[in-house]
Amino acid sequence: MKLKAIITLFLISVMMTGYSQVKPFRFGVKVAPDLSWLSPDANGFASDGSKFGFSWGFISDIALTENYFVKTGFSLDYLGGKLKYTDAMEVIDGEPAIEGVLFRNYSLRYLEIPVTIKMRTNKFGNSAYFGEIGFGGGFNLRAKSKDEFSYGSTTTPEVENDVKDEVNFMKASLIVGAGMEYFVDESTSILVSLNFNNGLTDIFNGKTNSDPPIEQKAVLYFFQLNVGVMF
Image 1 (tube, rainbow, N blue to C red):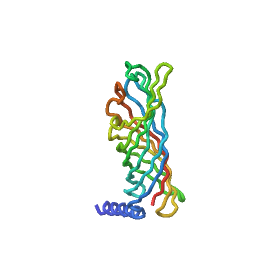
Image 2 (cartoon, rainbow, N blue to C red):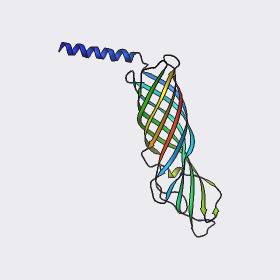
Image 3 (cartoon, rainbow, N blue to C red):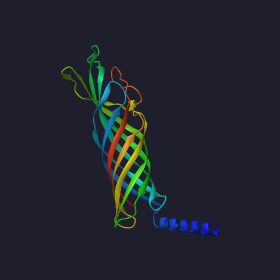
Image 4 (cartoon, one colour):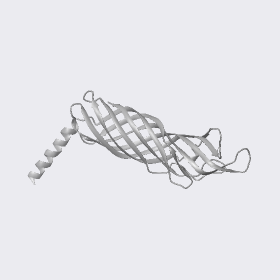
């Protein structure tokens, strides 16, 4: 029993020594170009392309041990994607509904709050490498679309619409990523990472506001290339 107690105390002291060398809380800022797209899951419409966007925000690491952290923060993400509604009907100038293809380019803005587990290697010189996995919650702040309707050889002029009432206020996603940190000194580091945000929930809440309305369902995916500074 005494031997077990001694070993246990030794292991705890080793862990605490390692932990004491790590700041319990680090704070930073990041910017990130992103590439996003919508993956539809309903009949009558399909993906029509991706969209480049931008993100900026604040990040923090909460130390669990020397190499494990809870990573969180918040960011403003400018995302979107392109969809085409292949069985669309459109009322033009009061005439009977015309069958054609509705092209929509979505611009979406979210407040994103991620919570991930960050696993970091020991330092190799001034550098360390890490992976992370966790979940993200997004809150829609703005949703607009640019619409074009094509029928026969005719395409209507592009029209911008506010479609916030078509988009769910909240979305959930799985986040995975990997990157590296370069330590300028003991506490300040520059980080670069590539993250993939895998949507888990439908971002739409029903039908479009077109005339007549179209049932829609889609999940949002995006890559982010993060560049940040931690203090």
